[in-house]
Image 1 (spheres, helix red, strand yellow):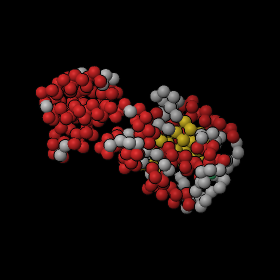
Image 2 (image 1 turned 180 degrees about the vertical axis):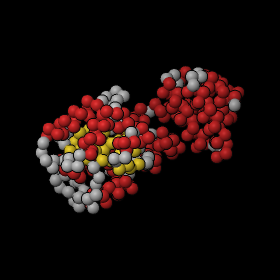
Image 3 (image 1 turned 135 degrees about the vertical axis):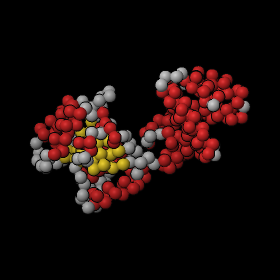
Image 4 (image 1 turned 90 degrees about the vertical axis):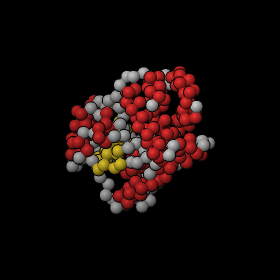
Amino acid sequence: MTVAQLQPKIYADFVKILQTERLSHAYLFDGGFASWEIALFITQSQFCSELVENLPCGTCRSCRLITRLEFSDLHVIEPIGQVIKTETIREALRDFSRSGFEGDKQVFIIRQAEKMHPNAANSLLKIMEEPKTNVLIFLLTDDANLILPTIKSRCQQVFFPKNESYLRDFFARSGLLPNQAKILAQLAKDQEEAETLVKSQKVLQQLQHLERFLTVLFNDSKSSFLEVARLVTLFKEKSEQELVFKLLSFLLAEQLPKQMAFAYLERLYLAQKMWKSHVSFQNVLEYMVIS
Ligand SMILES: [Zn+2]
């Protein structure tokens, strides 16, 4: 799999930008699908020793070190726990100013940038505003709405849509049935998560349990309460229960005619809302069965 396959349009845009040398100093990549891979690709283009029409070769020493995240002029910053601390950003910037080679390029990739402490963000802003520094910054986030407007306004924003058809093919190649591949493609956030889902097999079993639940619900409503009891024992954790709502919504949209699916999805949405306001999982499922 290559960046060109994962995000064909964005890849093509950046090829053009690199070839016409119009790269900006700061980018906000919104949406997780292959934004990391594109950031690394652009980083390679800045250090590659065997550029072909301004594009990185992917195999020279610099390119390989960047792929392995062992390149000294690439700084990857991630949250520790739930936050990117001010100190972490300051430390990275200090290294940067200490390096002292004028014209030496440095690249910062900040993952889950929405978790940056406001002071950390301000430290970063300062370096972005210094005209002489040769720095390239990528802020990666799943939700640009959570990024401070002051930061946003200084970045070129690029939205990374999820490539569902790519994920569908990936799941199908992994041996899943077409309808399962379709549903898991909706569930997986990116390639990494898709690989985890295939490896764990757990979600596939859960999907089968829910398919059975819906079959009983539609064909043998008297047994539905037994099914509810079964689901309650299967999905004990909050995170698993959240997954149930997601998978059910995909399954309903998939299996029912549009008008009917809409009515069911509305009830599912209500049920999920009740669950979020701490009604028990069992009660919520029973409510769904009754209504
Ligand atoms: Zn190279």
